Image (tube, rainbow, N blue to C red; front, side, top):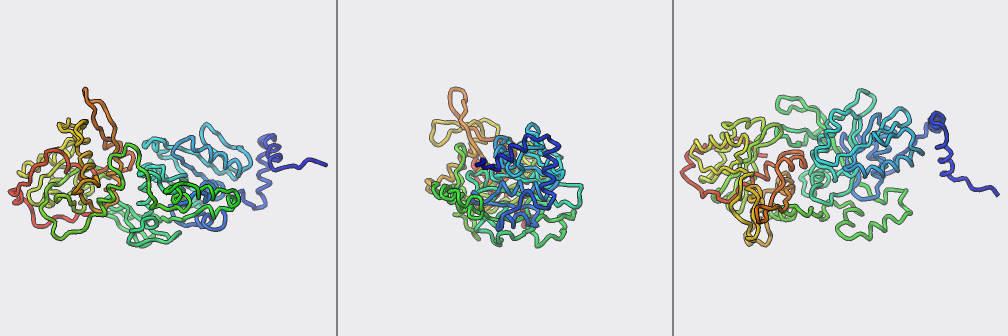
Length: 513
């Protein structure tokens, strides 16, 4: 009896063929029109055929996310790139693509470039550090594909998709992000980006696969528009981009139906089971060990917030002037333990000290102390506010702090550490009178992005916070709103001076977000 010949035997034989013969064999196999890969019926096919410019596919584990990314690159695109956060995570993608193609022919592991049948090209890339996106600056691809999107920073994602382009009019351009719910606060931006599908409090929720269109407004924020028709934003005519979210689960993946993988997911502890088995984006996430303010504390402060007609006296105002570009000048208005809604202006508008001062003066009430970031453009704004004889406190985050934490046995490395740790203490749920913050997703992201570490300060130990530039790298934007709130907690905020109200115009410009 002859030995049974397996698929593996055929593959091993094919590997022994000269390269030209292997290419000829692949061409022969695919010449009858049968594709190398086809999407599975259900959500995977829906994602593959979706007309959205930006697709988020996944949610639960085991839904065939990686297969979708590879399948799109192999069958539908001309020049694609698949990103993972770390290079070592690309090994699984290499192995799966080898299974689909039957060999590693055309793959250069040193460059991460895979030349596919039909003159297609697939690149594999990684962006471990927040600024690693610059490695791909200007690199054209008709498909930007992200595996485990919640591992990327918002800044990395937005920057990388900015170079989506092709010279071939017959090839569509698309972005596909695949992933599970975030397991840390750093992935929370994904829930905001696809808020219409993932945020249960969204005022206009979207159905799975439904297209929604967005533009970036003059404030640098996403703004939903009715459809894909071009709209005027300021002086520019802009083309909206569409998004969608298509959920999937292990039940949608025929390849895993008999493997016991579902039972493995069912055995996971909560909240991981809800996240991975059901794709529950509202299941609890764990904060990084060195996160300064716990995410749940910020969410609790926002849950306490209610809109007030009678706000009481304003006790402090935090002003974080924009450094320019896409940054926003942000104002936090504090009334005791209650904060009013954030007010912002585009950095392109508040370009200097006089305009920044002109923006903030109408917002001051009851002679409240204006806490101003005095670095950069803030120093000019500070001079103008002082010249108006207003109640002003200069806040230099790098300046030495003269106070200690509540525990009394640890110091602050500087004023930035001081103001953020005092804000943390005010948000502590054991605080008998905790603060209430407006329900603002950007503010939530800003406050939960701050990290601390313990450093040596002479013979003592001290708290030091992640710098503003480091947070900018993580978020893809400046944490202006978070800094504005935190500045109202810096030590030494002056008591209100009601004499300053004489400079207050009757109406403020409508800069509110």
